[in-house]
Image (tube, rainbow over all chains, first blue to last red; front, side, top):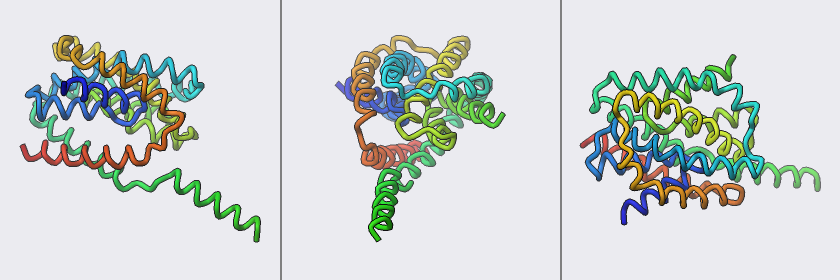
Length: 133
Length: 113
């Protein structure tokens, strides 16, 4: 049952690029007794079919900026190789603590970053007001 | 050249933590001129490609548990279909606030345990 809830929630957030993988990794390491590196491996495998499906839908909706993907992908692949090798050489416990710090930085930003859609709304209102003035 | 290094940073995070490249990619893509929905969708494209590389390298080092992942994948696929469908419509701010709170709490616990 928990696998269904965690899998579903992770799928929703991951398909939207909102950091869904965090849910799965946190669940696996904190509650399912999986080590940090094994949990990260499970998340990467999990993400592949989810991202593939989401990507097809996003492409159909013309939401993917392909030129930007092309410009970032080569650096990205180099980074992925370095990052993967790095996570291999450090101890599981240290990796887990670093991951927790990364999550805190992400979580605080999600909690306290300004609401961009509200800002747009406000500036629209402001523009409207200045026009009527 | 800047975009090359921005990509490197996203790839590094995604490889190092096996997750989370997307949460860095989204603000970077917004800075490079994407609107919010486009940035989220484009991040999925980018991180998908990077995750293929990461998965290969995790596989070489024996950190891949296919049976462990398979338990979650069917539910994840259902979630992905919903998520991708709603991305065009949803106001994600409440989602971000709740998620941010849950993740921060979990991370603090991870540091303490």
